[in-house]
Image 1 (cartoon, rainbow, N blue to C red):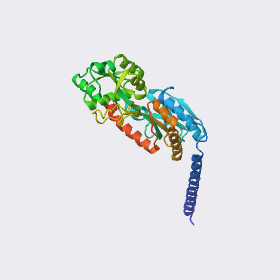
Image 2 (image 1 turned 135 degrees about the vertical axis):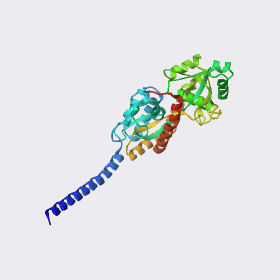
Image 3 (image 1 turned 90 degrees about the vertical axis):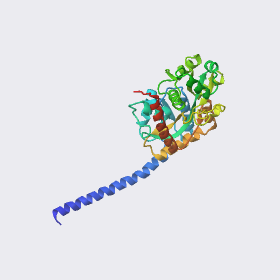
Image 4 (image 1 turned 120 degrees about the horizontal axis):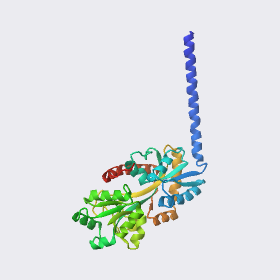
Length: 341
């Protein structure tokens, strides 16, 4: 055998040996990964809420943390990381290790609205997350100032639309700020109903609600949980809910679509996600734990008191839902003209 042939033979043997070693290494990783998934969770889990303490998402995260702790056998430590409309906390979840140990609350704002409001969003709401399950959905409700409604004989959404068409530019509606759910709902109503009303943005939903009560604004789209006490006490009148189906909490209040405005289906929702790339078996375990927690009677009742309805679903169904919501809000945010840096 010539020297060149000897060199080639040696190289082939070395290459073959490397391939065999690599195959052995890969095959050894498979049972290791399966074992890690089977052992999950082997340490406490971190749960990031992208909003301040005390709000509905924070309250629900802490309630579920106790339920899931009993199911998984590990503490779930809730951390509030508020700022930039939820983007700071969402980005922390997206950048964590993809092992399922960092979870967080996703919301319609962080995953469907903000991608179109912010030009420099630091995360991809679809690629950077592994959806676990939706937690709940909450309708918004169109509520009107009582004195304004009585003065102008407005009893239904149809009456409001008729008044607005006869008096273009003379009505106004308040919201918690540019790009908020209330703002987007108002702009969609304007477009679908063909009316001209002025938008007044406030620094949060609470100031917008006070403006409505004092008569500074004529109507607003408010979160059902926040509006329910005012409706019950007769301080405002509910004309319609924004979702495709009526709310069981306001069964006698029609939807916007039932009131004659087609193509209107908006609601607030929030759910559990983990970092994109987390093992499928781990995501399945998390889905099972959170779905079981959401189906417990005391959890469902607590959600109802917050104006929400539990809506656990498979991780794939939640992933599909997030994509559809993101696509839907692209048109609505563009329609509103709202942008944030």
